[in-house]
Image 1 (cartoon, rainbow, N blue to C red):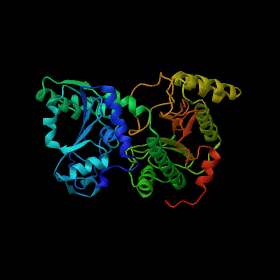
Image 2 (cartoon, rainbow, N blue to C red):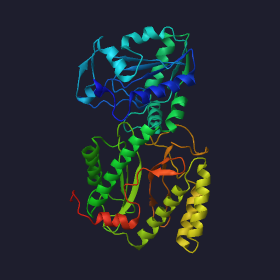
Image 3 (cartoon, rainbow, N blue to C red):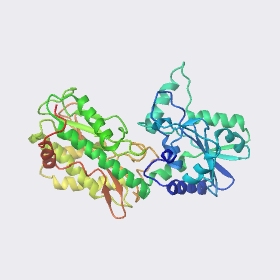
Amino acid sequence: MDWLLSKGFTPEEFRGRRQRVAQVIGRESHALLQGVPRLAGMHANLEQSKQFFYLSGIEIERSYLLISGGTGESTLFVPMDQVGEGHHQTITLSEEDLPRLANLYGFERVLPVDRLKQELQTVSTLFVPHQPAEHAMETRATLHHAARLRAQDEWELAETREARLISLLKRRFPDMTINDLSPTLDAMRLIKSPAEIAVMREAARLTSIVINECMNATEPGMSVHKLSAIGKYVYWLRGQCREGYDFLVTPSTEQSETLVDGDMVLMDGGPDYLNYTTDIARIWPINGRYDEWQRHTYGFIVEYHKTLIAQLKPGVIPQQVYDDSAALMLKRYKDDRVATAMIHNMMERNVRYLNHAVGMSVHDNIRQWHGDPLREGMVIVVDPMVWLEDVPHTYVRVEDTVVITRDGCERLTEGSPLELDDVEALMAQPSQFPM
């Protein structure tokens, strides 16, 4: 039965998170979360919703979690028929199994799901997430976009699971006060625990291996689809997981599905590893050698990238990082007219190069933090980019996932080469994926 709990975390980790929720919502209140629904596909892998996993660690479909404010006492409600099919293991729970589940995974009680309505009868104030729950390969932004498109379809008129749950609660418990739990979860998810950072460090190691294998396999004439397929294969081979979001694989100038000699290719990817991901992007020469223009342009953006990273530490506001980095780069490239123009281009566009937080979702849209000082435990990307006006549809970028530490930052995705000479040396080695 221990396979129902995800690897990488202890029950104490999740109990601590539930205690924090209980402290925020206060006594006389409760919090309710719903797990992933039954999947329709044959042998479909069960992938728990991110926010349910965050507070429970449990991979059981059709389950619910009720947290008592103040005390943090938690009740897990589970179906009593077949569960766990996503792991290619199926069990039928009995009443005798429930105390064992509670003891094994740190819940005060585990009850059949048909007891939930009865337990809610005495709840006066209930916190439930109003924001949509992310699942595999989803972000809050993509979920909101999909919801907007469905709302425009007069034959659809679909509502989110979160909205439907709130409607059912209001109908069945008209005297209950319902509040939004999402801001509390968002604030908690912004700062990663040591256990989360350890999982993300392994996810970053895995995605660095993937990028390196793809670099090493790249040849003129290869399709972008094969490069993406190599990445997906290596995720399964080395990490027993799939990608956390669709690979971005695109030539830097030639708009083609075939990699052309003399061009560069951009690859951006990350895994779904134990419900967490990381984000990385690299650009490398398709023929294995940067030409003079590529070396100058991509080398410039790599230097900008390293300059940004050097400014990161707790207490610094992102805009100060941008301003200080631009000033340092202008000084360093004061005699380089082309580089100076690129710096001014980047300043005018005012893109946030500390682009987004990363965690259980690759774009952890957990709250607006760009105006706040950086804090220890934040995991974000550093992603400088420049648009080249003299080469249509072309932009050059490099991206790493970093965690803010006590006195600086750790580059989690450092396993994939950044320096141009190191990229060329890696690409010169024999590939295990010949074209």
